[in-house]
Length: 360
Image (tube, rainbow, N blue to C red):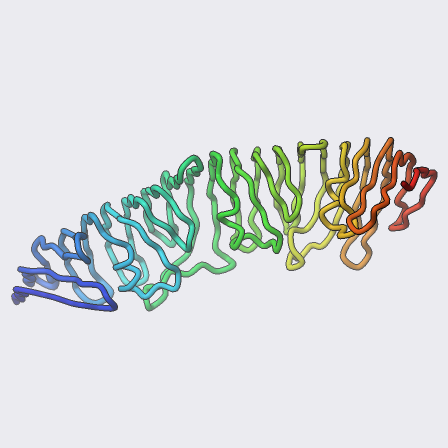
């Protein structure tokens, strides 16, 4: 009815774990420990106690400090690398498939999957298949986001957490100068996305088909080869379509707007389009980066483009107008001067109504 461990030293995957004076006694059907300390790595430690009736019925309560997350990474053999120095408290009551877990966590000077941060902190709990997040704060230099809400999931027989298509989410994100390049690998786009965003994003509904509300202002936005000064985006993602309520983009040379709906990726179930894009600029910024023969297009340029249909019947309609526009070419000494005119796009066909200029 009594177990005493005078000394415990474990060297595992490059990390040292040690403890002394652990006492466990039996009280009726329950085994109960004393308060004991586990040293983790060079400076970290956990202090607390545990009790258990069996391998799937147990409780524990530990405070921890100065834990180097590389040691935890080595212990669990995680496929995702994370670093930093952690402190906080973890409590758990495990009753088979119905665990209750509470976590108070603060990590400094770390990274997660190469996303660097100065500080990450949160209060969290897991109960009735629901992960509840309270005040998750990420900060790095000037960028920051705060998250609150919940999502559902569960642990399998190996105590690994998983999420399936039937699980739900209800999470709010508050962004402040958040650098979007940090999440390029997680978003379903092949193009580079960057900029510093401030505003609110809300996720709600099924994991497989969430409703996402976006209300964000972005400084120095980047999409693929396109660069801007600032952008305002008000949008909703619903039923596998991205609805643009308001998109206004200011660049070095002009102003652009967009509204309508479209799929985000080719994997979205709904591949319908109905988008209107307008622009007024001193340069043809949307075309120049993608035309290897062009050096620059400068003048008074305005256009309207309507995209509609689906992936099997895609239609482009609109117009473009040039006033006193000069076109310079990369591999030619010649250039086009004083280009003036208008062209229409009707059912994917470019129809030049009138166009005149001088090749020099």
